[in-house]
Length: 403
Ligand SMILES: *Cc1c(COP(=O)(O)O)cnc(C)c1O
Image (cartoon, rainbow, N blue to C red; front, top):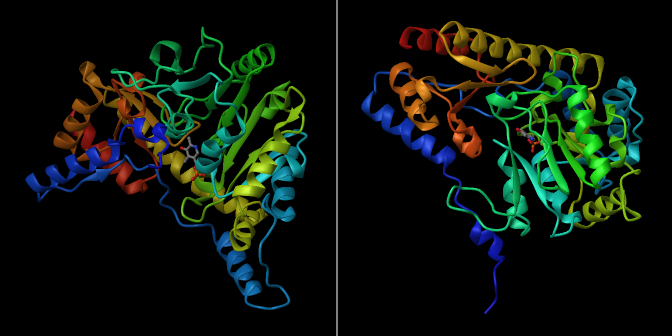
């Protein structure tokens, strides 16, 4: 009899969003006359920038003409996009990254998940708690997480709590970690990290021979003077890989494009991680569609930049409305300044799910229970600014009236 990968069997079912859907359905059935406002959405809602659409249409036309048709492209991405990324996302910030350190992909979910392929099974993995579940589940699939304990933690993972007490900044773990996942600005807490804070992690990684897997999917939402890239930090090119995505930056959640930066200076006992990732990608991945890469390139054009900035400002304004409205209603709120996420403390020490029920029953507003992102998310709740301005305002008015 064949065997399956037993690590997959150990994975718990992910009930978070189906549980939410069930409770919303029950509420709607019991209250058919009441409307629901969804502030739990983790997907963008504003359409693609016109400059992106135009570029993709033009690329589509090229594909229909023999002289400009393109078949398989380079697995690492076309030079035009890799160069645009280097120029605008790195060189413009004084960071020296070259095009052959950029690997264009179909998104940061794939890359943060697949990156584990190039690391040994016995590495000790550290994750923030609460966390974007992809880091945890993909390490469980690879056999690096061990077994799931009764309190919902994997026994081989190092959890770094991010709570009100530490300002949602993970502390250096007591147990030595080999692979450290960091995400700033953070999903779900909306917290960000300072230059000094990030330097501390880079210093730790260099001193301990660790690698930092840095997810900066929300970099475009930064409004304060904080690092956009881990490569702004001294020494990071010897110890870090960075993941970026056009998903939240430019509304590409359905269009699919992101990239990963693997510096050539990053080595392990003389082995280049850039070479390993190149080998992995050229074997298992066939590149992002030419049409999509032309769309991503257009994000960097002057018109594209102006258009995406307008959309990001729209979401950040929603975040401000939500954050300030909740604070005025007496809630303790975090995030929403450098991120589209607002992380609130549930009132009266309610559990995340008890607050979910209160919020929908009293205000008809739906969010995401913090406990769904990890044990330390208990007692917190995530609202997002990806809805419309009108709905953000209406949700806050309802919450103010109800609480
Ligand atoms: C949305 C998100 C991403 C982006 O994922 P894509 O696969 O590029 O759409 C990456 N990391 C985090 C933490 C996210 O929330």
